[in-house]
Image 1: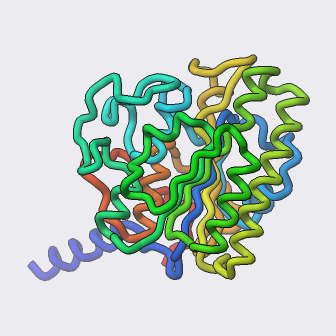
Image 2 (image 1 turned 90 degrees about the vertical axis):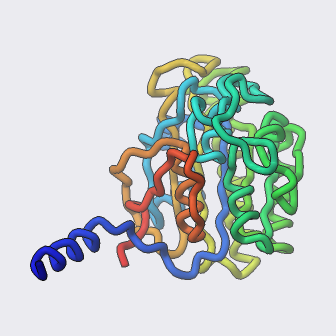
Length: 296
């Protein structure tokens, strides 16, 4: 009997979920609309690549289908796919399929509602460029909600100001480019790569704000996207459309590490919840990307 108990204890220890990194007091999620993972190797993005070289990354993370905006921003923030949250189209403002459950905010449970329920005094912020983000977030659960009206520079500056002044527990920043350039001029074009250079400068503003706020040693930055693209569009099943970057940097993150585990965009919310020691809603399907973090 004693041998059986010892074996059970050993098995439990082996399969125990990795402990969260210590000293994570802030998380910044930077979402880049239409940023295909295919573009990263050739892009001139020194700030992003510095996050990669001093952090963990994958260029094989995947969005959910269809590879369009609202369905994937919802999945990223809500920890589940379209069959659960119900947003199924590019511009979904309400679920086309009734959400399997709803939070007290009237939406499928999202990361901001989870934070408000379990850390009611924590500050959170959302700054977004594309108006379609608005219907997907639990505004009443968020302290600072700023609609940037398709102005990414305004969003970067506003987010930097909020980080410096308020130091939120979770800040989500949505940039509308390079999606607009992808639609108007095309993916894999010189203009698309030029827009990625502008995106990198905005990411740099956020990194500098974290440093100026004195919270760099306790902030995890995650950079990802809703989808990629091909030609002048997206929504299909090609890898250019489906594969997205997923980059993590900060305390406890393994340095210069390519993540081999499968990552789906709804794993982002699960990772944030895990880092903050929060209990996930039963309706979520995401798993924390623990491979990105050092073993303890």
